[in-house]
Length: 598
Image (cartoon, rainbow, N blue to C red; front, side):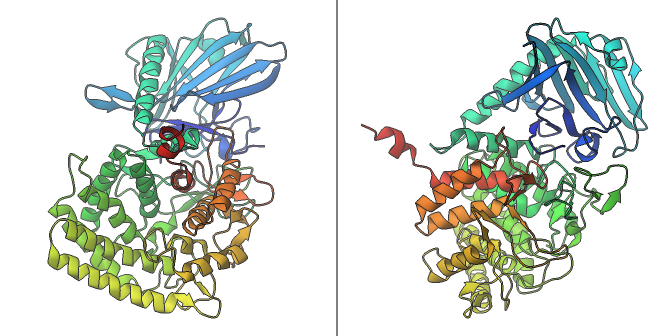
């Protein structure tokens, strides 16, 4: 049975998910939102025709794996019953070359004997058209091609081709190298490419990690989360995908199967916020480039909640029947109809993501008047729609309301513009946006507080709390010392807490009542507890939540509150962001932990 004990490799152009025995089970081609040429994650690992790429060890006994320290290089070791071991090193090349970042649509796999003489069988079985086509291998002198229409995949290798094409077992006596890439000639010998690009890729990630401003505690967890977030960026356009997969259900047989391989403006704001806190500001500048392109194309200051990683690419939702689904739990969806909803919180997210550019003197291209003018267009829309119904951040498909979080984020858009205007010396615009923010804040406070239940509620005039209310203090809408915030946290504990996990909400939606916990919501709860002065509780829940990660330190979207199983799309940026921000809030400072130790 497939599970989410997966590792991820990538280079901000392509990525692959690899299971505990070194099998590629998911890889979209030739970019993050493309056709999953390795798709067994959604078609069952025991289906003989499913798309995968693995190294099968004869007489297999056990496996172990790890990331090389502070890199996106994954090492898997398979050992047989006699102790013979094969070591598999996987990575996607990424490094500086000619003053540019080299990040080809390519994966490199090195297979080498680590002990004894292991008997292995290498199987490369891509499928095209979302699992509907199994292309036949075409052998060249040192490569195998898989071609169908405009899709082409080439494996260039120094391994004996007949063993690969016929999937025959052989004794692994020396290192073998396989470059999986576009249907193009590899300019150098496979072992030279693999050796040189492995070293360069290691160095890139270690240099990138070295300049992160990490907290003293939980350093390994934060570094792994940061690298994972970076891998979820599509550097060519600046977009940030919410996750690398589609249709992994949020809960067993729930039908909550969505395609997350696109750029949600809300999720991207969270990612930019986390990476900024770590000092990795380049993703922010790239994302602003993406946003400016979106705003220019949309015109009029109206935004959709999600976009393709290349602006203009379609997100129209459809179901494919050629893949059975994760653990057989379909449907498999491509595209996402939520992209065409009204979700008003996106305006605040975009403006928050851009705000730092006006104040951070490290940036070579700080925010200028032109950017402020574009943001004002979004602010005018936010002010106009703040108190109108939308689908909300939970993307309800069957109803709309004036959601408290959406309205509060529109307030954030206006207050953010006031701060920017004040910072750049535009006093009249600062006064205008401050007045708009005050108007919205008064209206929201009057209608979002339920005095009978003593809590803020998820929609203006509503009755129920949801987990998004935990963010009201984080976005500056209400002070954590305000008794209403403490009462809201108490209501969420009463209604949404399950053990040490927090549900998004506990009322029925289009698919019934949710029963798995949204990982990010528990991190929001941790931060709320810390803000309320309940630091020891916050640390205990944080530590417990860290234990829910898979063995490589990665999270999906949801966790079963009873079994602890991970569910939902993977790896989930929301979840990794929550880990980073909570760790930074809870950690001892370096001064407390190191420099004042006697």
